[in-house]
Image 1 (cartoon, helix red, strand yellow):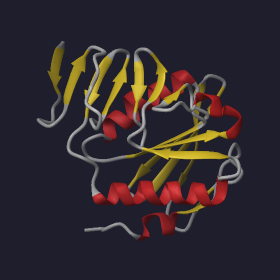
Image 2: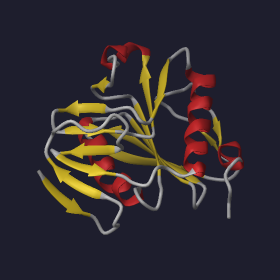
Image 3: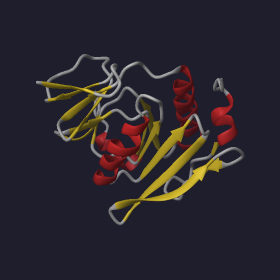
Image 4: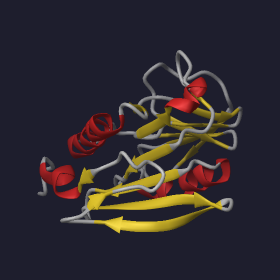
Length: 189
């Protein structure tokens, strides 16, 4: 096994597909494993919780939301752990006992200083390549949510939502997320 140290002393990149501990946070992209440390911040967790709660409240009849850590296995060389995953009812066949095997309908990543570049570049490219219908990149520093919709084999940037906006989706018409509420509980210091 090869271990590559990232620029941050606390992140490792390993090549291989061996088993990892139950609670390790990592993504495998094209057979390269990217480990993430430290754990997500409290603000990160608050945002993920609020997103999942709002999706449950507005979309539970249409599908189901899952929060990290949950593996999304796209193929043998690509296993990711998005912060939030939404699967429409008609695609529940991809929801297995221990993971999601296949392409979810919506994925959201909450950016952090440790993972933001990885989320916006590597992971976004994998979601695009496999055809995840919609991707949300949430930035707790600029208090925005960037929405990308998969069309004609690539992502089109659809909108950037900020203060005073309500997140909506043409694909997931049930979605209604007030951006002021999304960021209301975070510590802005």
